[in-house]
Length: 119
Image (cartoon, helix red, strand yellow):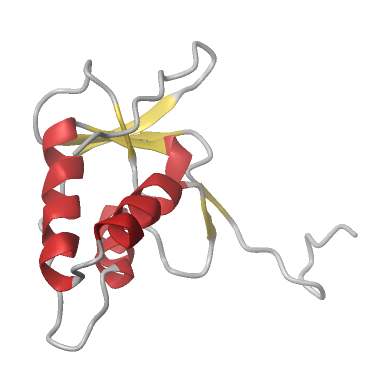
């Protein structure tokens, strides 16, 4: 499967390098939930705004996620579109089995009424 290669911008700051988490489905989950498990294991709380463009990993990790989704969903186009729109990006320079989290990969979800809310 082709992966999306997006070069880390020169002004991007890598804030943390972590081991790629192992994730799996519960019996009744759909393919998209695998990515939710992946991002939660990286540290996303499920409430803050997540920018998957600022999560980078290796082709190996990307393909492992994609392969797991293909086993659950027989529609290769649906899985490919999910990965392109919501999956992590890949970089050849990242060490095997690692994930780079770039500055801004999560942003606090500020709601109207919060002390820091600005309209």
